[in-house]
Length: 225
Image (cartoon, rainbow, N blue to C red; front, side):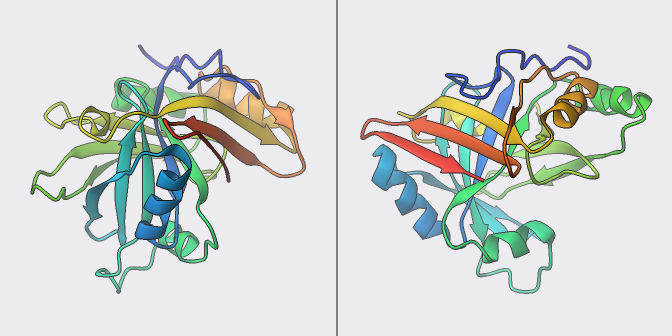
């Protein structure tokens, strides 16, 4: 699909998920606490997803519908000698909050090439993997802007063709009821999105922020960055 990531319906207060949303990341300083937090509000208990070797994190997952999911990510206590920016952010969290989101632009190699042709500094694609409890190792590639790999601008992901997408076997019953973005510089952020082929309306706020409402059988969970 080339460079166009069709998110034209995404806006502040938009009901539903961005069209090309892959997953939303909910950070927690403790995985069990993050799982309990989500379950207490949605009624769905996320399943342990596995560990990220060498990265220092582990996760739990729940499906948000076809090919989209919520990732609860937290430090892995068994990986003590890892120093990474995201890991340090997670350790400092006092309560679960959104720390990022990912979209799938199709062919990631081609997408990165076209982004660079726009003069935008983007890193990747980088290979990634996770060891599941059943021993399977799903693999993927990611890319992210050098200046914003944590925040309103998503990172980009392409799953290995031989890997099962997490949404296919994660616990279901939840959906994205709303997803929104706010920024103190909405015009500037909107311009950045457009350079990436992402059509998105950004509202003004004092601080950059992601906001999501995830509905489950028990009720809705409102989370922010």
